[in-house]
Amino acid sequence: MNLDKKKKLRSLKVIISEAIMVLAVIATVAVLAFIVSGYWINSDFKVERQGMLQISSVPTGANVNIDGEESSWLQRTNTSKVLPSGEHTVTLTKDGYDSWSKTINVKEGLLYRLHYPRLFLKERTPEKIFSLSGATIATISSDREAMVLANNTTKWDYLKLNTDEPKSKPLDIAKYFSGVSLADNASTGLFTGEIVDADWDYDDAHVLFRVKSNDSIEWVLIDVNNPEKSINLTKEFSFNFEKIEMIDNSANTLLAIQNGNLHKIDVPSRQISASLVKDVLNFDHYNNEIVFTAKGSENYYIGFFKIGDQPVELTTLDQPAKVVISKFYDEKYITVLQDTKLNVYKKDDFVAFANYDLTFAPEKIKVGHDGEFIIMNTGDKIATLDMEAGLVREWTPDSSHYDWLDNDMIYTVNNSELIAYDYDGFNRRVLAKNVSAHFPAGITENKWLYYVSDDDLMRELITR
Image (cartoon, rainbow, N blue to C red):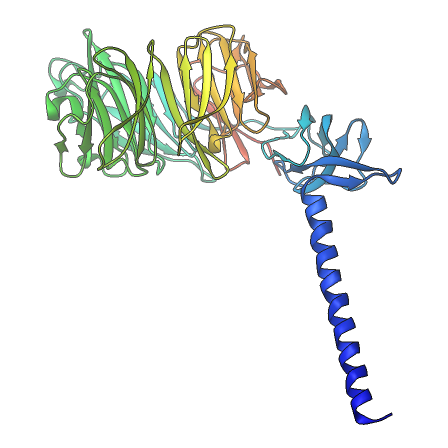
């Protein structure tokens, strides 16, 4: 064989080899695209379009049962599995723990996340860790790692819960509440106000109290780490605020409504802005992005702005509405509640995303953890919009007085029983008995359950 023939043969081999590699890449991409689009070959070797379930739990490593059968592919939580589209009942179990179960609807080509299931140890021993004798009210931080215990004196307690042995730190509030909330002479050390509401910042460093006394309302921002930096907002600015919210993690920036005018408050400099928007009915924020409803000259409207920018009108309304802004996955949404109508819009272009009809008109609307769900309620009626499932479920807890046990669970106390539910009302469980309904409960560090019984703060280990 001469040299030219050898070169031609070598070239042909290279071409064939590269062609095979290209075809392999194309085939691999095609298979991946096939799988990503939700297609799968079942046990009967038939092609069907499927979805994917991604599931985690607290504690991790729970056994997964799907539709009554142990899964051969998905044996433990904190993993994923391809499933046929349609309804599936997922049950989680683990030795020594109670069980968790829910029926979900997996859609073709889409991922369904279950990241909130929680199992509780069956055998738990309550321990007393702090006496609340004399406390009249308590407020717990958003991450359930700190608590302020108020009483009818000016000496309160600040308690860190995320420690092995929680200890209190004295909190002297005499300088920060006005004579409206204190006895005629603050030196007598009596607190006479009624705490209507208390909100914590995300750093657990500030609590914004709304206090009523003698038909007057005052707003006080307490710095629990440096009480001398606390500020009575009502007294500082001589305004009767209708609503105040902290819009950053460290409570340096507040938004407040006064006589329908929306203002920004800079706490470190003790300065309040001119009116940002007039005739505001309500507002919500996601970091520095603000959405609001207001009364225009002829109708109502929804507006939006970023701190430092001019407000813009998004749409007009024929009647007042409540509005919230949230982020789910990488998309931001604006949800509008108008009487019994619930409409969800994509924030960037304000294009309608989904709409729902409720059987009652909620008074309140609030975004839940990670924007995955939105809670609406009035009295003992709750409607939960599940963004993951794209469904609204209406349900009724055992009592009209309820709160958050952690980021995903709601609890109430009824007949001295502490009852917990998932955010959509499923998986109702009685966690403790002889529980006080006048003090908050919470789960800290995914490990401890706190509640109050007979004026004692109790703690139970719920996860090993």
